[in-house]
Length: 289
Image 1: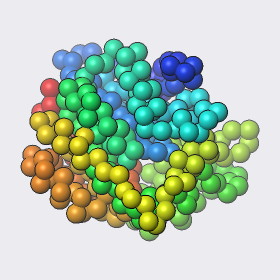
Image 2: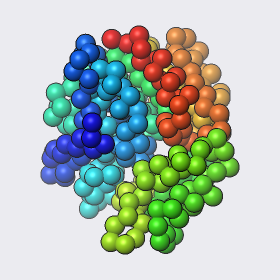
Image 3: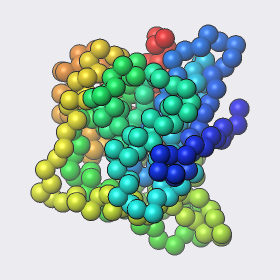
């Protein structure tokens, strides 16, 4: 199976959008497809190891690049890097793929998209996995993310990129193996024209301009509560500053059947590369139709 089963569509405003489409093992009975939605400055590539596992189990897996990320076209107006526009793009991708119901897997911003979608189209969501995100987002984490999104010092090689990531994030990701840092660097940067570059539009940083210490936080409980009837798995990095233990407890109280997984030695957001985490996700998916 190719690492990059790419498809492209044109958004309503003419922008070119990319997504990965992993076909499920044809020898197995077809199961509900999976839609993977990445974090703010992340791409579909974050889900390749997971997608391969799920496809081998008979599931079709779509992994989306929002506009301005991965292989999707950058937008000339950064104000279009908004949840509402991205949601419209995502629905266009699902329509192109012929998917009208799925298990949704959202990392960080992707989880916010799941809850926003649930407010209006809950029937599309047969089950959901939230990777280090919940209806309440911690301000300290947002302020930290604001400090690095769109900023990149000169890096001569991908090895230097991996070293930088390990140096800057190693305190919160002490449980990550050296080979996984190299994988994470390749998911985060691209070597182009002899330089290491970001895999997203740096103008994306402007979406965080309003994040201040006195920010009144938006919550997403309405969308979360709309998922009361479907299976849920909430993953939290043990060192996360975006999803708190308290929010995780509140999620479980409002959805008593929710499964929870805490990934030791990782922060925001767990990389979905280590065997114990992937095996735990397998166990969640196993009973799902």
